Structures are given as structure tokens and as C-alpha cells.
Length: 460
Image (cartoon, rainbow, N blue to C red; front, side, top):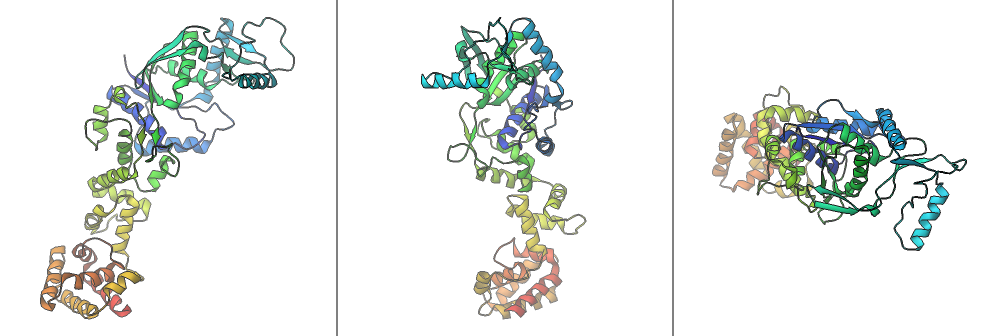
């Protein structure tokens, strides 16, 4: 049987990395088995839905390259389907109208709490045959089993057994007729042919309710996998400050999608000691039965390390395209490859890479006071002036040739390399930062290098 998985976000907020990881696990499971990955937008909560949030979810999927198979499915367009099944359950006596008022429900809960009982509906309208009370729009409740055990095997957590008494006759349609979450999820997963449902373990105790729906309607239930949450580095719930932010913020911060996916796949899954996975390797190796039972910890250093790796491995053409979003346009630039080779090792994010490139391509307007004080002292002016004269005479064009001129002045002046290196770096970059000096000068060329040296001498 063909494997079908799905990801089903609600468009009430941004897609955060916990959601993206769940989607990734579902997508990999489908791709590994040559199956189908579906995207369903659970937008039945009309009061909280956001068009902006829906668009952000779709953009995030487009950015990371996790396309769904077929059209995106919207629950808001399927109310007639849900109504049909609600009417079927009412007709078969498997669901009923409950006329309990909000005041009655609140009083029942207060009484149960006072008696230190678990709050739950008491089934008072389960077999009601009298005259309905006036002025109350009924909700529809499903008849849950009142004895026995609701059991299922979870691919992550193992065998789960929940006493039927833990599940009350829960609401499947509100008083205004709109269906509820656990009802529509079960129907959609069954009608969409989902064979595997991978989701966060915050949904674990929704599963017994959904099984009640499957059984009542005679629908086939999928295999379930409930994935432990992602914690912060201290082992506590991941917050926005820790990294639980909009997936698209990672793009703005200069992360590559392949780095983010590689990072997320390792949060709860492993293959030996391997840390770096291409998308093709993830698809080939991923098995949802290997998902870890315990929660995983978000590690920013690991994400930065992976991102730096993917930046170094990226082609010049790819980086030139990506850097345009960060204020750097190297399209058609003669020395684009030299610039990228000189800076790729120093940029853990595209933001940092763009900054490193700008440091080289933009002449310093001012000099870092601390760096200037250290570099522009003693014979610095004389040494820089002599070095500029040597460059004008030698006219080097390669980094090796520029390095030879540096070696020559060190030899002629009988000075340490730092005596030319420090003042030259501050002259060219404005501070002690940056790539190799010979690389920088080869990129700038003789004229621009001398121009920056002359400006620094004039400012000493």
C-alpha cells in the first residue's frame, strides 16, 4: 500500500521550527517510500484565521523546497463533508444533541473540582428523549465507549492503552454548526488516505478521541507517531527568544534552507554519528520508527556550524544569487569568485558573509580608534608610504605577487611582519578584522590599495 503523509497547520500564527520539523519528518517518510505528502490548512476557526499567516506557511514551504503533492487542501472548503458525517452519526444513534447550557456546564465543572474529580461532561443528554429546553442551541456530542480500553501502537512511544472512561462524550459540532478539531482531523486523515500521521506529542491525548470517530464511522485509522518537543539549550520549553520564531525569520537572518533542514532532522533522529546530511541522504535514510522518544535540545552553535558548512560548499553562482537579498550584488563583477573565496570561511550566515564582502569593497570612512591607536604608531607612516611605492613599482595582480611585495618590505626594513600587517589592515579595512591581506589587495587592485593607504596616512 502506498504511503501517504500530511502536515496540517492552523493559519492562526507563523510556522515555527517545531512545526517545520514535524513537516520535514512527514515529508521524508513519504519521499523515502515513494509515497505522497499532502498539505492541509486547518482553517475552520474563522475567528482566529489569518490570511497573512496562511501565506507565511506556504512561503516557508516554498523556501525550504518541501513541495506537497497535489493541491493544498483547506478545511474551510469542506464543511459540507463534515456536516454529512455529523448527520450520519445522529441518524445511526452514535451522536446526539446536547442542550446543556454554559451555566450548567460551569456549575458541573465547579462541583467536580470541589470534589477533586476530573472535569468532564457527565452524559446527561446521552439518552435524552424528553422535550428540549427552550432558548438553548444544542451542540452535537459523539457517544464515546463507556467501558474497556482505547488502544493503539505509537511508532515512537510504543503501545498506548487509555481507559475508555478517560474520554467523555466530546463535542463534534458547536452550537453554530461548525465542526470541532478532533472530528474533522479524523475524517480528513481517513478521506485523504493518510497511512502515517506524524505530529507533536502535544497531540497524543487527542488520538483516543480521534479513534472514537474512526470507529464510529467505520473509517480506517492511520499509524501514529508522536514526536517529543524541542527544548531550549537548558532543557526547558523553547521560546521565541531561543529560536521558536517564524521559519522565514531564519531566511532573513541569513540561514540556508538546506542547513536548517539538516539541523532539524537531527533534532530527534540520528543515523550513527553522521551530522551532515544532504536532502537526498535524508530521504534515503529516514525512518519514522527511528525517531527518538526523548525531547531534543535546540543548539544555536550547531545550526551556525551547519550553515557555515553549506555556505562554504555552495557554488559561487548560488551565493551571488542569495547575497542580493542582503545588499550585495556581485552579478557581472569580475572578481566575484575572488571575493567569495576570501570571505566564505568567515561568514557563518549570509548576513555575516555580506558584511565581510562590504568590508572589502567599501573603503573605510573612519578607523576603529582602538585598532588605529595600536597600528598607527612609531614608523607606521613611513613603512606604509614605502610599501605604497613598492606596489606602484611592482604592479602585482595576484595574491602571491602582493604577498611577495609584503615579504620584500619586511626584508628591506628588517621589521617583523606585524609592522606592515597591522597598519596595512587598518588602512584597508578600518579595523583589525577581515580576510588575508594578500587576498584583499588582489581583489582591490594596486590603485585602490594605494588610495586607501594614502588616505590612512593623511588621517594619522
